[in-house]
Image (cartoon, rainbow, N blue to C red):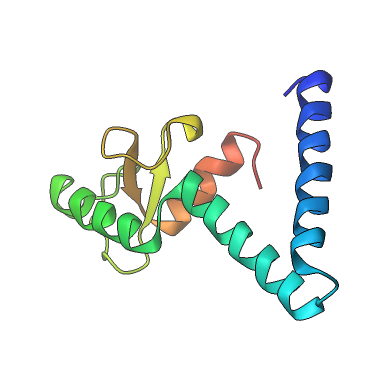
Amino acid sequence: MTKEEAAKADALLTTVRQMIADAAEGDPVLLFALRRRLFTRLMYWERGTPAERRKLQILKWRAQGGLCGLCGQAMEQKGAELDRTDPVLGYTAENTRLVHHACHREDQETKGFS
């Protein structure tokens, strides 16, 4: 993200924060609830709902024959993780693979993520 793009995002955040505060009308419980709901919905917008990701995980499990998409070894479905090839493209069948947690962590480290 460029500095200009970050500035746009920051300006948008300032506007949204004010809109949320206005909608809460000074009620701290409502302010909390509004922030929580918007946070959750934004996460679902990017990642899909937990049910959608679970369905995708089952689809990938079957398509990969129960093998890790990184090391190729057998893995339990429980604890396996969806790994996006390109994070921008989201959690789709074409853009994900199912991997061991340890393989995912190791792959992220090699990419410079922690």
